[in-house]
Image (tube, rainbow, N blue to C red; front, side, top):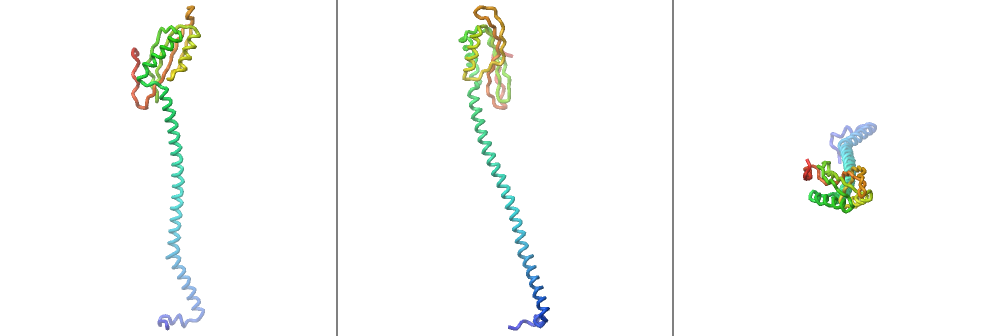
Length: 201
């Protein structure tokens, strides 16, 4: 098949010019293929690789957050269990009068001659209220030790925060004890202060 006349100059050109023209054409085709096909594809591949790296970083970060979240949930559950165990040992507001009677009965059962049993106004803390109780009594050292032992065995938390012992100069009750006991009542943050014990200001 004869080529159109427009190609005659190329067909009739010397061999060296044909080679130059062929090489030039090949370079033009290769350059066109690169700029039209390969370069956009490489740009798209680079963009996809950047997105993949970003996604992998995000996945790693998300996995770390999930692991931390699970750890925090376990710790929160453990803390809540400990808090519930402590709350079980702290008297509620309705149990305070019963606790007062229990302490007074423990003093009497230990042989203490109680002259003062006075709950003081509560001291409000972040998560609990501390309720001090003044107790003055006369007894022997053995009876006072027995009272301390009874207080230590109580189901509710009661601490002896102050102890002052002096001589009473009495044969049956040679020691005068001035004590400050403290019990604690759980209070959530923001809860109102507990009412003051009767007879306090």
